[in-house]
Length: 316
Image (cartoon, rainbow, N blue to C red; front, side, top):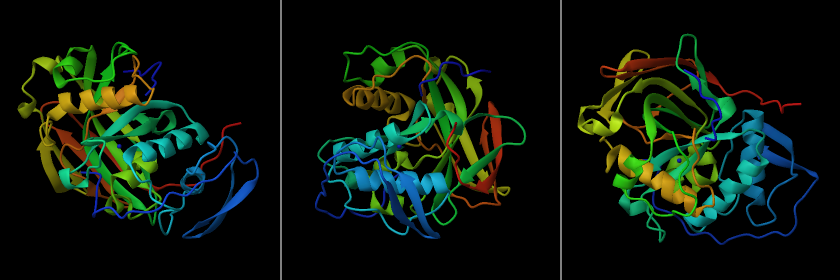
């Protein structure tokens, strides 16, 4: 199975704290030192949006490139999810990889803001996308946050209309798409990312560090989603069970959210993009040296060994 021409973020925690918004003017081209848990790293600040997001973007991108962890959130937490998506957009622009899809995370009711969003988005990058098979390795940030999530993954088989910004679950299901099983690597340099809440999750790529896509589930729109069942294991111990209806609204609601929020961000979804629809069995902490194994009843399995994220070399 090939993924050609791909244009591919409960991820919440304790109650929000209100912080003032910092601001800066002008894009920088100088190198800047960012404090990490294991020292400092000098990062290139070129091409970072000229707004208050700069410090957050620099810190997270620097830590991700160094394979390092961060001791605290680097600055003032964005006031709203819209502000957090501005941070994410700036980080995407400064990251040396192509977006090939999006992970959807669920936001518990008590953690939502004035946007009314009950879910959130984070990018999946081409170099972090793998096809299920033997000998797979997935990377989490040592000293940061690391977890696995069993996922049902949709691939768009047609472009979404560019002028449509609101989608119902029924409308989303009518857009041509194919369903696969998958495993998301939820990892961030910031160990407290989920505790700090959705605005922090959105700010760091939706707490995503990879996606594995496995076997197809044929004709998904004609199936009873309650019959799609999954189980997650770590080192052969069962850590969670569930399925496509674990999160409210199921696959259709997650797909509709991804279509709506992406369009409102000026990023209408395109044919070939992947949508990881949300954790099917829970969010399961995992560390380097452990083994992840997700089983999708009657469909297939995905296994991978977990390693520590290393320094990321920029492509020539």
